[in-house]
Picture 1 (cartoon, rainbow, N blue to C red):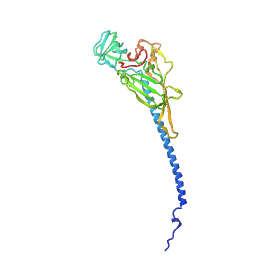
Picture 2 (picture 1 turned 90 degrees about the horizontal axis):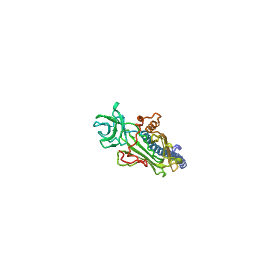
Picture 3 (picture 1 turned 180 degrees about the vertical axis):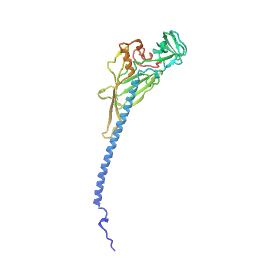
Picture 4 (picture 1 turned 120 degrees about the vertical axis):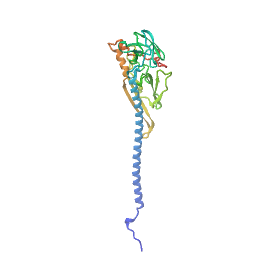
Length: 314
């Protein structure tokens, strides 16, 4: 018996197969191109997000610490320490539980109520300080640090270095914080930060906050300040800080084989404690009671000729 085949059971011809494969290749090429496009754009988005996060985190930290600059170490308004023995009037050495938070030149408020007075520390040891007392004070009298550092942002800060001093962390300890912006070598620059206790023997090592830092557009400085800086009461104030940071991606953008760059700015960061000090110093009704709130940094901290910081301070 001879088998008969229906046309519907026949396979595809070679021509039909080639046409189908050509159509499939066109569709596949389009799909691959679309996937490649979205992959490259995803990579670009990731690069941009990484740069944005890095620069924003650094500027947010600077904004927080600039806001704390000039804060005296009077944590929660509690007493620094108390007298461990009574003191008489006149030049006296006052014994305390610990004088670690006290520095030479500091104005301290002794006692409370009608017995309260402000004295200036002329010398200190680990458990005592010397000052001129106007009245007597009993054992247990509280000792407070009050006021602000007008020099919370040191006037020696410049276009590439920002110097802060005060209770920056709000934990009752005085520290010196330094930001250094090295943006002169494109793509190889860094923004670094160091934080050093004023009681430390030497400045702490710096750590990198942002790498791949670039020169800013138009030659804008990393750190900007009012010019001229205002002066009052024998102090030079830095009442505002601007920050401009340009960062380059750590990889090339695959869409154009170029490095990406972004620029972030915060031009009106306010050191509120420094501004308070300036307000007190320029108040037309300023009295000694007000100027007692203007604290000089530890006298051993600042080099009188260069204004540079040195350690130890306390």
